[in-house]
Length: 219
Figure: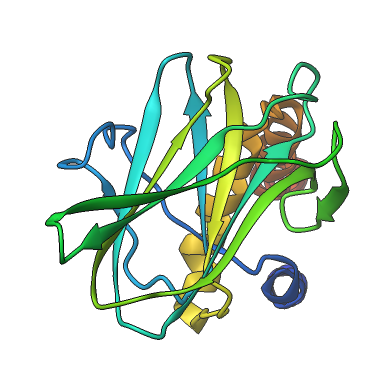
């Protein structure tokens, strides 16, 4: 029986490798200015960051890049009632060596609402697509992304960065399970968490229950 559970577990993990393209970056929600900006380890690797954004707030991210690097980022909004018209602004901020100050490029969502949908199988979550950033890095330096809502609305968003999938075998047992839990909490899907723990409790406790019952019958 244990071998069957293990095989099923491996099959589930193999399927999620294709379904979950982004590595999740966890954080303590303290990246509220340039000094505390959340560091993106490698902007080419595919990352995802789940965020809650209150009114009059901004979240800061930073990464190092080389001239000629391609850069990709996008915003997705979880399909939750009340977020149909939510669309925070992304500011791409680059160091300007000539004037020793930042040059800012603003990316707004200019599509229709609530937007195109896509389903993410790993977390069983549907998202609304918002703006995408595709550009070439102009020169070497430290860059920033700042996400804020100019309409002073509060909401949730997922920031995706990079395009290269980079998973190791160890990630199947560390990053992916945690990512599933974080996804459920992010979209307020506590029912799925409850079902998971009920199933886990049953798998652990039922064999013990039947073993004790057989021992009592034998005595």
